[in-house]
Image (cartoon, rainbow, N blue to C red):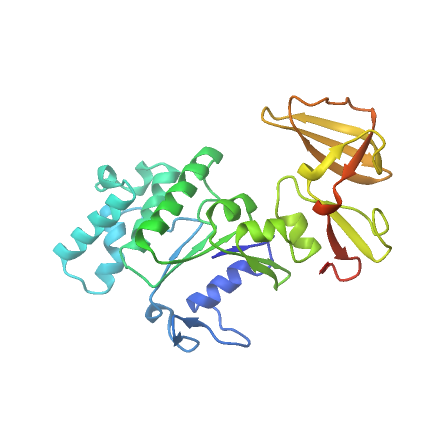
Length: 301
């Protein structure tokens, strides 16, 4: 389950509430069939992975991974074996005798994951664990996490503000804004049928074009159209002037201004590409349009 939303929307607070680090003002927290509102964090059978790794710099990788078992009083030989097994899952065996300062950012994040795995918890709580990594390493580690989830078959609750992480990693996505749950669904459901105008513009790169009320609809409705469904068409309904052309290799993003409304269209590189300053017209396929109440932002038929 991915908790997705902008900074300050309540994702980490919700995660901390599940962990027992915050008390809910209302409602219940269940882990499985067990109500845990009054259960101490250490007794909730959860493991947390943080953005900051939170490793002990003076301990070896093996000692860092073993530490949760040591606190529980597990014997030395057993915890060493469990640590090796967790390290093997994440390809860390060559680093077991090294210290965190000798590791790359990606390796340190894997140590933090191994330390969580070794406890074999009911729930893994992950608070933006990849945000300190560079773009390539983030992509590689995303794939490792998806594979790890498949292999250990446990519950992951994963906080991020990165909708690419949400789309590529999530079984389900919960989108939050200002402490309110906007929508829960599979990544594809949330992309194809956003429940609110906020979700429509938060999910998708580039975001959905959201037209002012009255443009392509009644005065009480805002029409949304994804960039891939906004097509150049002579004599189209939407008239604009090209402001930016971005050649990305596999696609071209065309940004245009329609009387103060920003429109983005995703084009094939082989298509005719107008130049900055050219007047253009777009068609928005009626079957691909999304409609939102202009006042509440809620999706309407």
